[in-house]
Image (tube, rainbow, N blue to C red):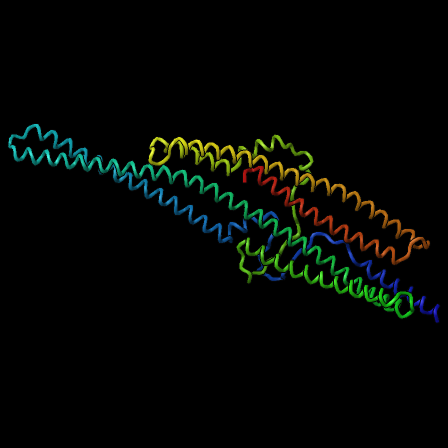
Length: 401
């Protein structure tokens, strides 16, 4: 009877091995909602989708357009006042010439009063033109800042969406692995029950195994919920309605080979030249310097503060860029190390499979090694996804955003 039980146990183990063999290593997952009108989302298309759909970006675009319209209105108003001023001066010149020929004192008095009124009006027009010119100059600098802020908003939204995109793929990847693991453990459950019935394990061991399985199922449910939430969050950042169907492609195309040849010193100089935040500070300094002649608007202290603010922005930009570089290189070096370890373990598993027919390794040991390899591959995929984000952020900062 015992021999029959052992034989049955071996047959079950062999069956589970071949079942587990169908589980493939998990790579970046693809989500498809299977709708003909679904919006296709890939890593490289995120910026185009945001420009077409994101509400915050549309509001910023409207505000920029509104400022440009106000600027145009100010230019038109100044042009009208300058035209009126020219007409007014022509009237003054004409009356002044007429004044020289007038003999009647009453008429002369009326003419002088008319000239005085026109000169007063001319002064008022000049004051109004100066006021509007200052407003126009301030608005011109403001529009320059708004343009830079608009570009910064686009890039920040793109990076935010890219991070959420990678987060979704990472969770989908983890969900796929956990589904395989839960399926494997469910198949193992019958073996554990058989071991318990045969007295090979204690009730405590069996209960611990059941608790572990329950925890694994709960973990799968949590990851699935997180993945669904990540899907909604990504839609929100992209500006896509939650009712819309989307297809999330797992194809992330980016040239990561350039990471090893990064020159931090050269990239830092390029970053400083491109930085829109620094550009904004430079515009603000120009504005303060231009308007500092009018003490009622800005004075020398304002100029000094603007210069200090620009210097501080440059220092912060350099520090943050170096931090991002260190983060990128740490991620890159970790992947190189873990990729080598994964390759070694793949080769070890191949050897285990090749020698299993000679009785050197049990099927259960091979099953466990393959499951560990799938998990290791899953973790490496997550690391690579993170590397894409770190590299994308580094390039974004280098380009000035």
